[in-house]
Amino acid sequence: MTMIKALTRLLVAGVAAAYLHAAAPASAEEVEVKIGNFTFGPQDLKVKAGTTVTWTNKDDIPHTVVSPNAFRSKVMDTDGKFTFTFTTPGTFKYFCSLHPHMTGIVIVEAQTGGM
Amino acid sequence: MTERDDGMNRRKVLECMTWAGTGVLWTITGGVPASLGIIDEAVASPAKGFTFLQISDSHMGFDKPANPNVKGTLEEAIARVQTLPAKPSFMIHTGDISHLSKPSEFDDADQIISRAGLNVRYVPGEHDLLDEDQGRLYLDRYGRGTKGAGWYSFDDSGVHFIGLVNVVNLKAGGLGNLGNEQLEWLEDDLKGRSASQPIVVFAHIPLWTVYPEWGWGTEDGARALGYLKRFGSVTVLNGHIHQVMQKVEGNLTFHTARSTAFPQPAPGAAPSPGPMKVPDDKLRSMLGIACVTFKQNEQRLAIIDTPIQK
Image (cartoon, rainbow over all chains, first blue to last red; front, side, top):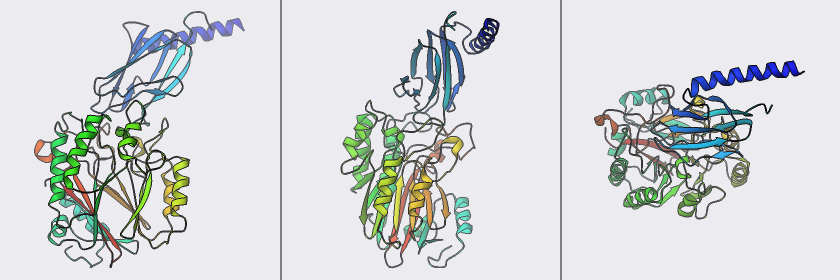
């Protein structure tokens, strides 16, 4: 059991590291998501608890970032930003309330050994 | 395509009009649409009977390269209204009055649109519900006498008009949304009406599925259309996609109007549906208004899309 747990943790950490490496090479605690061409980039994020994610709208049309029961940005016009710090582990699906076909996910994992 | 009553093949004429790049005028006789002619002819022969206007997507406050002067083009669109040979009875605005739901944006729209001297009936677009209270501002301004998020119906000259709201409570991954409460209201609103009464339904997002990949459709639109099927003549007027598009399905005629602010690409023609930058001398040919005529004696409804400038 402990073996499987440890392996899983390793695997999850590996995947998270791969994501973080792609998304935010500068820091593990600050991650950027760019909104462009009506898509969130990256669309799927894996972060550790405590990570702050900043969305920036690069489109010529306003967008929002809404995760029911978790967070709701104000409308972001071009170059507008929204920042949210994920303190609790979990899966946060979000979308743009103006253009609901725009969706994304943030998976938040416990910071250290909490699993 | 010069005759008004020749019953010429509709598709052929629509194709022809697409090619002409000007606009469309067509009629509905007993629920069967037939084409009429292009704008110039329509303007040349003033409509008799009952006419109303549709404007859409004025996006006051938008200032990006696709059109840095949306006030100017709205002014031009309203000036076009004033040149129409037959004075319309009223105007509908199918949403996205403002770009960011700011009071100043609504003020600008009201100030310019009022120059037409017409009573205006509104439905909101998703850009009109961006205030802190998610639509309170819109309802305070435009929602008097409406139900729920701003839906309502009224009769004018024998035609039953229904303004629907499909931009509230949008669900992740979904399209436009009417919601159960509004659909129940609609079913009730139509109950007991004669199937021969012409119906005009207007809402911001197309009620038919234009292009789901870009969210251009209404999740529960089919249920609304189900309630409308028994009527002999149903015309559905929408905005949102900033281009003229039409479809006929049995007795239902679907039509989207141009924006007065900026064009958007044809479905799938660009990486995203964002504002489309076109050469300055082309812009005004891609913005415009729609003029809808109901001829009482002939039981027909005609829609003319008029660009601000050819």
